[in-house]
Length: 125
Image (cartoon, rainbow, N blue to C red):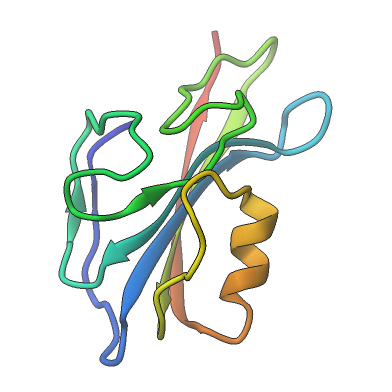
């Protein structure tokens, strides 16, 4: 992934969650990355995060649509695709194991989102 930095995390944030997906995939939205329980003190994710269940800062990887842990880069079959990196500030940690899906994470975050932001990039081959 690209290096991602952010600021303005609200008071009361206990953890952050990140989802990257491509809504332009031919078979529907394709999930490229799910990362949760990022410590609230973290303000940057480096470009080369290892695809391990739990990374060095304690955050947990979910399962992407490639059925792998970690970030799966863009590889659109045709045309230009949009890739959304969505960051959520949460008032709790997510009490689930690594390997959860985007849908499971979104359900667990319900009622706990203090703030959110997104970055969109375009890519074509």
